[in-house]
Image 1 (cartoon, rainbow, N blue to C red):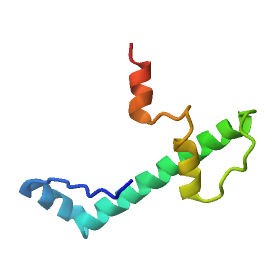
Image 2: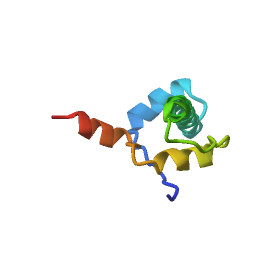
Image 3: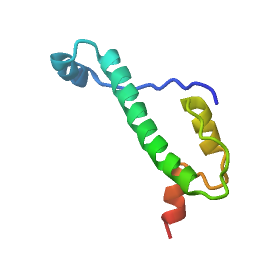
Length: 91
């Protein structure tokens, strides 16, 4: 998977509003994204560590580093991302 660049459009008025509280809008957005990634990672790690430990057919070791863990989880046949989970639960 390749890196993506995200673009956020903020009009002049909203920029002034943000600058009232923020030293640097870009830094705040980057920090907010880092925080979101960290929270999503913690939830994914917790959820899937439990699933793997409870899966009697899974006998391999659970990777201790993030990249290998994510690769293991996302390559499993029972893995569904958020969009797929939502689609599966919609009648």
